[in-house]
Picture (cartoon, rainbow, N blue to C red):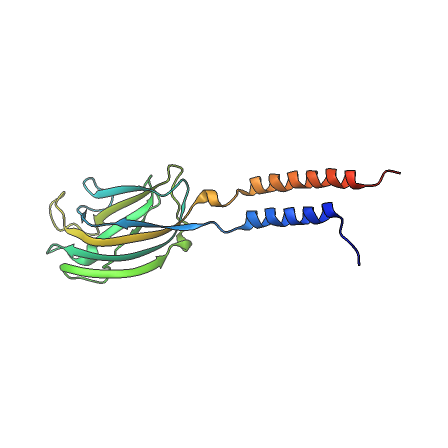
Length: 193
């Protein structure tokens, strides 16, 4: 039976651990946002809309969204017009979501479900702020007048922290450093003639 020298076995274990770290999946965490009291007032992007900024961590990735909410649309506005847009704080890469998208009635509606956001490649910027803007798809009333209210419920974002995954350059440098350490050990382990 051939024995692997001690330094070689330790090197293989160290390299395996480092590669495992480099390929480890990032840890996801749920961000739960209570939407009670948010109002849908004007069209998206207009002044006067309810807008919130939630700190989810620098460059965090939005993986999925789930919701369980009760909305009220004030007649003649309808539930399908109530929407929330979300994305980075710059507002340049927002996704707009209407929980009551197929409900063309005024009054109260309850909605729940989930959506995989992976295909959108959404992330927040370096400031770590997730922007939420509650708005209307169609303006029935005068500007500044609320057309609906998000009575109760939550929006839950599954978020992956960007810092949980090592950058490829960092992993490459770590492997290079490990290779140099192994080369020095191998040289020391050679018997002298």
